[in-house]
Length: 310
Ligand SMILES: [Zn+2]
Image 1 (cartoon, rainbow, N blue to C red):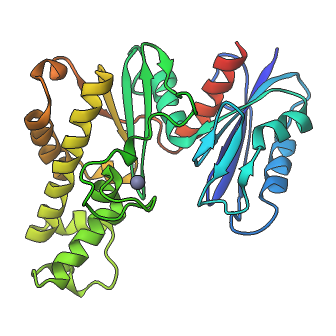
Image 2 (cartoon, protein in one colour):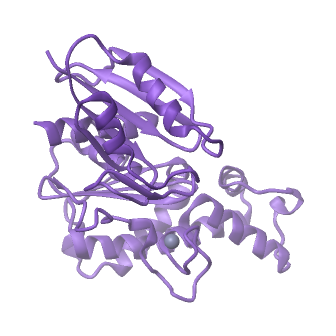
């Protein structure tokens, strides 16, 4: 029996798990702090994997990491979460150390792949996954294939341009989907409106989070409600673009901001209907929440390793 090792590395934690064939329940699991801004991230990663490395044969390692990265060469280009890793060939290094092939892709692609294989998207062949939290990431399955692209940088759905004169995005450019619809972007809009004189129950808060805005909206705060209406409006424009390109049968939303529910999704669906090129895109289109939660990255890394080593 040959096992698969999956790794999910983020700014706060490294998670490693070992899986038997055809199972998504790990036989071993390790979670440790990545201490991403301190030296030695790679050594901590190697140790975490060693701590669960099984006696049995391992077929492959799959790894999900924040990008941008090149999945074709297994190299992290420059991820803001792990400043030490610049053009860092993490997959070749793991391959050399552990003696098994290592496959790498970005965390949003991996979450999309996991939802397709094991989660909310099972049975679909054309899937668009979007995670909305601090940033916005995307993953696309097209005709049963994970879309990676020539440079391995496809499906960066959060950085589609909605308005080139729009707000500053987390990536440093302007007017991307993320700059309108991520949690911090929604909060920034609320703060700007309060500064320009709009009244709100949030005006007394020193820092406003998307979760607090959601609470205020549910309590009837007009600014908080309008902040989600605005985000939903832009999200609808973005998704109308995705439909025109990918024509999926299912849209899956993950990430913390997606948990606010109707506050965001009612204006989103109105905007989507209004901006979609043709209503036929919406026929039998499933719009749903992600099913795998925090395990999505890890399970995507598992799915990638199984797919590539099959
Ligand atoms: Zn951007």
